[in-house]
Image (cartoon, rainbow, N blue to C red; front, side, top):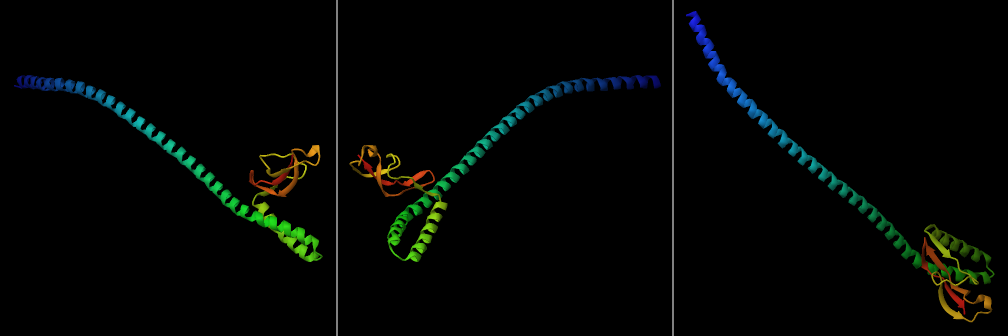
Length: 192
């Protein structure tokens, strides 16, 4: 019985192992197919993720650049606003500068030198404050060539001599500029 029992065990082992072997190889083939399909789907998922990340990075960079441009633009607008506000105040002060000059001309005729010195100190301080804010006088004097871009011709008179034709004869009102911009053109009389 031992020999028959051992043959039976061997047959049973063979029969048992045969179906397992056939199922195992079928499972291996299925798993290889599934692995290939998973790898393909993983690659497409990875490609999709990479495209998505690249798209989001592009959106972020564009948004960042747009924000930087916005900051620059608002900063420039703010500076222009300060210049404009400053300009309005300074333009409003220019008649006071003119009044100081007229007062100094009249005070120079008086005998009271202390009054002249006091008003002169105030005038210099006032003009100094305006200069610190960027105000500069536009140079215009008798004998200069008339430039319509810079000067404002009040009137034309016959030139006293041929050399003064087309030149400034007299400066009626001083001109001023704030930075590079002329805020009040000098009013002049031109020789014709």
